[in-house]
Image (tube, rainbow, N blue to C red; front, side, top):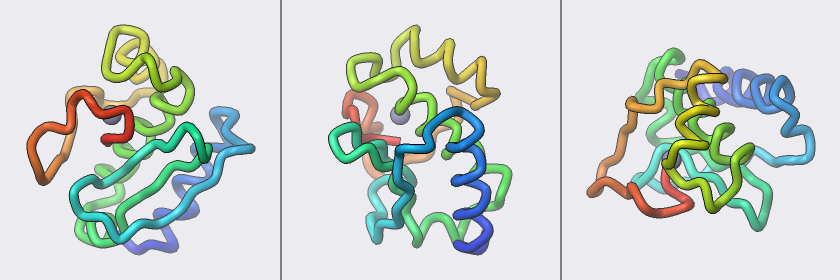
Length: 109
Ligand SMILES: [Zn+2]
């Protein structure tokens, strides 16, 4: 999808779920489509991957990251985070990584 459309979609969802004080930034990173940086309070989206993915998929990625932001760094991909994904309608089983699983990193998708 187009970056401008992704930006509007992501910012809208972040505001909807109370992340008004969180930033949204683009990254050139290709190892991950999205990252949640708790220290910076920023959700990063990979611009190279965003343009290659449909809006439906990018919405899932954004909701995945919002669930991370709302549950905090210790939740990782555990029960608390999974429950938040379900609440938000994020497909918690729908992960896209280009390298390994990234499963245990607090900053992975
Ligand atoms: Zn994740």
